[in-house]
Image (cartoon, rainbow, N blue to C red; front, side):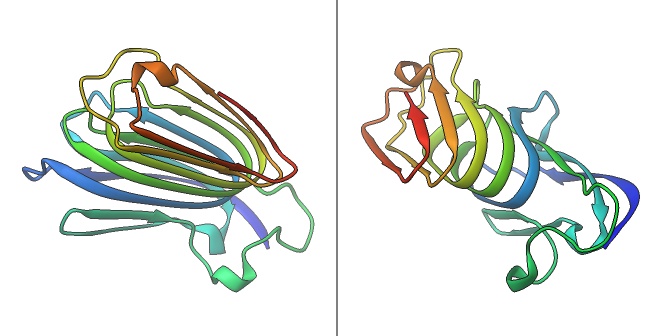
Length: 178
């Protein structure tokens, strides 16, 4: 059910990490991803008004998992009145090699990946309107970029700035622009 608006900030310290495997599981709403200016591995701001959607952040060694709370079988639009909100602003260290998986069910996304040291990026989305961009050249060799846009739309700008060694693009009824 839709309830009062809640806002939560989360920080995961760098703790000497040189690399990280990042899993982002986001069901619906607005997702933003950026490079952080802090000395942390991860800084996140979460705004939501469905209690079951409270995000869960876990770190186990070099694996960082950020996922929408609640029972995965019940993920979906809540019953009742009111307007559900789910907004995530996620920032990651530009000083760490990242292997990142982003799974987004529906919504809008601004993935400004400029400055991040991505060695692998997998974006898997269901429906929605997402933009990913790499505005500056990167010294990090991206091994693989995978984009799966089911019924959604995704625009990827500046792909030449990261020069992935391998690009895999899959789409359903959606629209993909590289």
